Image 1 (cartoon, rainbow, N blue to C red):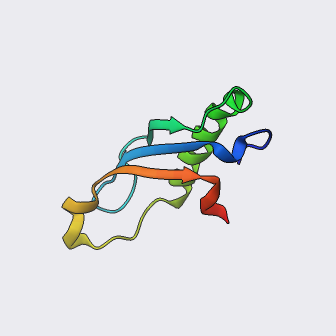
Image 2: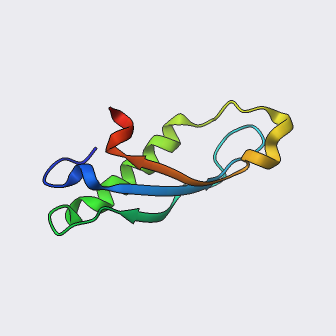
Length: 85
């Protein structure tokens, strides 16, 4: 995670698509970022890259086949410092 002044305020929201086997269908994309201040603006791109990398490292996901229509499109995956506490 990025460090420095106000880094803990950064929140990155991602969206991504999954194949039926739980693997990623393309690269996760940033939907939004919040908590950006003048003090942490230089860290926002790094925060987004770390969030994207986390999803890439977690894949493939082991999800129930019968619910593929429910989990094939993930919207609003939120990454922020409070999740690591």
